Length: 398
Image 1: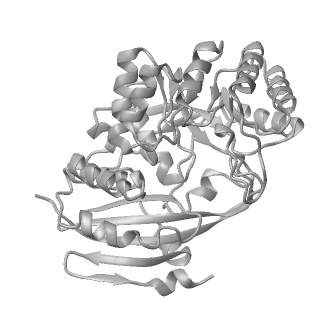
Image 2 (image 1 turned 60 degrees about the vertical axis):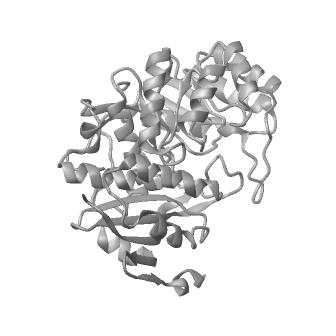
């Protein structure tokens, strides 16, 4: 049996090439890709890595949980390890982003890329460009033209204005401008109101209905998360009402069981769970299987960091949907680019003419850039089955 022997936690902040203003956190300007990174090491030396967005030092106490729950466990028993992540969640710690690290170990030990270990056969996946910022109509047209020139035939934009007429005018303008050349979809980000930096509206069902009517009238490909994710009944009513596909599912942290209940209720035409939030790789693939059974579309979400992108790419390539759906490719220059996002890896995850070639190396398919890790990262916790070493002084620095 291959045993989890050691664990390390890092806080890493790599600089972006330019400031980035994510639409889902109004008023926020990001200058770095900030991540909490985990490294598990087995007794025979196989490493598994994963990483999750970090606002700051909020995971400073995670080490004790990881050491106590995972060290000494069978590294190949993903189901048991996932149960322990669920146990962590009972205390308010939803950390599904840990699970891809276990799959990284299992696929490396098998000598296979993860998607092939999971039964996938799609070596290349078709992408859609996913913008992450609010932009004025002129800038949005320029952005769409740039993505079209790069080989994308579908782009997702963002809206989030207090005046719903502004949002409707925005999707109408870009849809007309790109008509016949590029499909447009739109992400409303559950009308999030993270108002520590700037305010934003919370949509009602009536506003969402007016918006999907406008989206259908201009031929949008789908409307993503127009309502708060916990409003299951309202989402189901909107899905039934809408003439354009309604998509969602990325932040449903209860995973497969919650998403299966939502599917039974009639929520969403397209399910988009994210393995880093919504139950890990295992549960996302169960969602994909249920979507196939119920005749519902499936494609994962992946706007977080390079770890999230590649973990969900493996989910998509193994899901059986890669031949008929598109996979998200976050790109929002000049601030959010694959090269800027993926400095923690030896190579960024780049597309080629709107396609992504799945890595053929064993595991998740990346190598950590040790120089970047040493320059921009701070290891704040190490543990083995025999010892624990906290480095709180690392996280006390400004």
